[in-house]
Structure formats: C-alpha cells, structure tokens
Image (cartoon, rainbow, N blue to C red; front, side, top):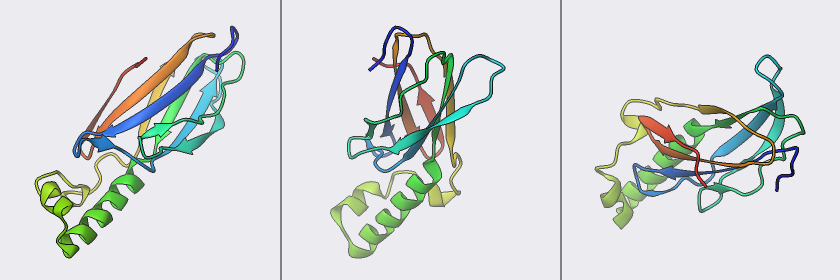
Length: 142
C-alpha cells in the first residue's frame, strides 16, 4: 500500500518457454533516493505458485529509483532437474517439454535479471517479467 510520500512495487514472472508462472524465483528489492544516491537493499521475496511476489518490502519515503533483482539461474537449474526426473520416469509432461528450450542445452544465458526503474511517490508499480532461457521482456503493468 502506498501513501502520498511513498511508492509501492509488485511483480510476477511468467516462464514463456513453458507457458506457466515461474515459481520459487528469489526477487530482491533495492531503493535509492536520487540518481547519485547509494542503493539500499530493502529485502526480498520468492515467487509463489502463481509466479507472484505478494510481500515485497515497502519503499522508504523519498525513493526515486527501484531495482528488482531476479535470481533466474537457480530457477532454470531446478526446472532442468525436474524435467530430467520426469523424462526418466516417462511422465506425460516430459513429452510436452521435449521441444521446449532448456537451459542445459547451452547453459543458463541470463543467470540473473536486474530491472531498474524510476518511481513517483503515491504511485503503484507492477513490473511483470516474461522470461525464457534465452531472453526476457519487462513492462509496467497494472
């Protein structure tokens, strides 16, 4: 919740290579009060089963810039291990994922994604991340 003196931030991640939310991604939030100010780590969260972080830390008064750091390497490595176990078990999902790009094919290309954006007090910023092993897109959502 934001007040007239602070902004608020939320995010979610969709893994576009499998068409599902990215669960279990660690997201860290840092804030600063001006272009030359030092970044202050504010804390973080992990995405839930719907790919959302419902509990990102509040921003301090005077925040002008926010940085979200998404730890994508651990997510893709975990997804690889899960897919490997499913393939070994001959599960139905394994067949559906055989054509999907996998990080193990050439390594994890984006081990982390850092998104920095400007904020205005009193505004809410929802920042969705569309992610796949070889690219990502981000935008200001609603």
